[in-house]
Image (cartoon, rainbow, N blue to C red; front, side, top):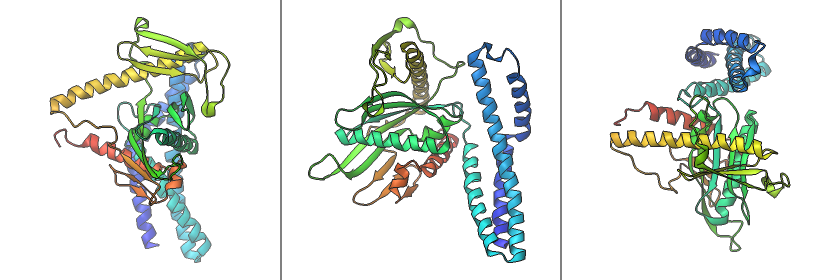
Length: 372
């Protein structure tokens, strides 16, 4: 019980730190204010404002319920251990041990969430997966990564909208663009941005040789009305084409898919998930604005890097994470050092350990002195 008292005290200290960072009294005040605004009869006169308000209301409610629920469970857990010790009840002790492990995971996960304090971390995320070097294997690898991230989102209950799906001729995909529609999705997934490398026996090689494949993950925050980059209609070209969905299924039989080219930058985006050309065009414009905002941020960052003396270019192939399926089994993140030999669960979407370590790594990078 002495050891468990120490564990409970450590969890209590961590939870107190989380409660302080989230500022629960301020959240409760904000919740009351949001609920009052949500009850106004003219709320939906401005759809964009209403959606932003209801989204924030849901996020604040979720944060409060999560922290208060963890606090209640932690208090109950102390009583569980005391009663189990008094009665020498092995079954009750085992139940308390299981709850302790669960609370350690959940409080640790919430602690990571409090590290997401960047200017765009609270946004939804736009993710693009693109195959790189490796031919057909890299296209198949891009499809495997899509499956990994979609299953990760499904496990968390995060809605995912596929905005673009380009099927490859032989296997896999040429490109997948999807939106993760959850608060803090960008901050959570930002550490996945970069090159992912796969080593395996190629299923497309008749001599069963080992193949190394690369795919790039691009993660950007969804733009908000307040920071959207204005797009001049004269600077875009709009093309329409017939939609196709995952697996090659036809979405419809009309030219409803839309491709928009931003002529000054050469940025091309497309959308085919909606049933009408008008809806697809509107969604594609949001994606374009998101890409232009990211380009603007990159230019500003490059200017700051030049002032600081520049930094090395990251060439394609300088991966952030290795996934090795042959001659041994291992997934290892090269930035954080996190690794596991259980490759299949990772490919099935169990990537929280890697995601949370990357969040801590990003925060450490952000907090490091500029001249370090």
